[in-house]
Structures are given as C-alpha cells and as structure tokens.
Image 1 (cartoon, rainbow, N blue to C red):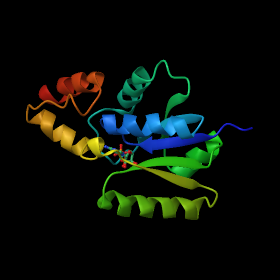
Image 2 (cartoon, protein in one colour; image 1 turned 120 degrees about the horizontal axis):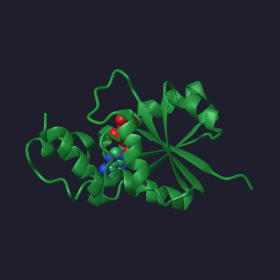
Image 3 (tube, rainbow, N blue to C red; image 1 turned 90 degrees about the horizontal axis):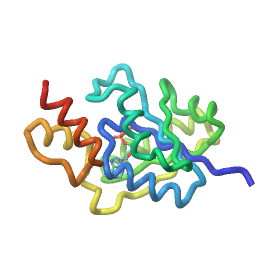
Length: 162
Ligand code: ADP
C-alpha cells in the first residue's frame, strides 16, 4: 500500500508545543508528516526561513517519519510536487475556524483532490500562539511551558538583544 503522507504547513515563527502536539498526533494517523515551513516574503518574521527549518529539524532529528522542508508560493503546488493530496492543520478557536475554512476552500478550488484534515487542539495547548509568545519574551517573561527549550533559548537571543 502507498504511504499516507500529510503536509503540515505553517509559519512556525516560533515553533511551539502546540505545533508539536499536532505533529505527534498526526504521525499516529499518517505514515509520514512533512512539516513545511512557509517562506512568505511579505511577512516579517523573527526567525529567518533557514533558522526555522533548522530548529524544527533539530527537534525531530531522530524521527524518520517526520520530515522538515520549506516551500515558497502556493501550498497546492508544493503538495503536487511532493506527491500528496493531504494537508494537516490544527484548530484552536472559532477565529482559527474562519481563517482555516477560507484557506481549505481556496486550496480545494485550486486543486480539487486536495484534502485538508483538521485536528482540534488539546485544551492544554489551546492558548498557545506564536504572537503571544513573542510578546511575553519581549516583556521579559518565561515561555518555558509553551515552547521547546531550544526555541526559548533562540527567542531570548533574538528578542532581547534588539
Ligand atoms: P500559519 O501562519 O500558516 O497560520 P502557524 O505557524 O501559526 O502558521 O500555524 C500552523 C498550524 O498550526 C495552523 O493550522 C495552526 O492553526 C496550528 N496551530 C498553531 N498553534 C497551535 C496550537 N497551540 N494548538 C494546535 N494547533 C496550533
């Protein structure tokens, strides 16, 4: 049987324990997850594309079923290139729903075979968002509970020396 490969796309700026939770649950459903870091030139990010890819690779370095890659441009084109039609996304709140619905419908219009699969966040991660994390670190707070250790270290280096 063909391997079921799902793409988990996102900005991951920074990568959080909420993202890890979706990936860990994703590999129980799919044979392989490709964490695809989006290179969005118009979006100002804390970490460069290379830094985000490197951090996530380091976190999953002993996990052959979790690949880390990046893409630029349309997700549907990337999915075709990789040879899968499954996209995994996480859902936290009602506001996520509106945005995610719009994205999923747009992607389906562009590529009708594409299926977006949603995983609902576990409640202990539902409050974790990249923007909140940036704010806490900038104000000198600890985000240890919300991000992997390596991310906390890199965030401090970046945000505090500004
Ligand atoms: P994007 O810029 O594409 O929204 P993000 O890095 O913010 O990328 O998120 C990637 C995916 O992970 C999205 O589907 C988002 O809803 C999901 N996600 C983000 N934070 C959490 C969380 N705490 N729990 C579950 N899913 C999450």
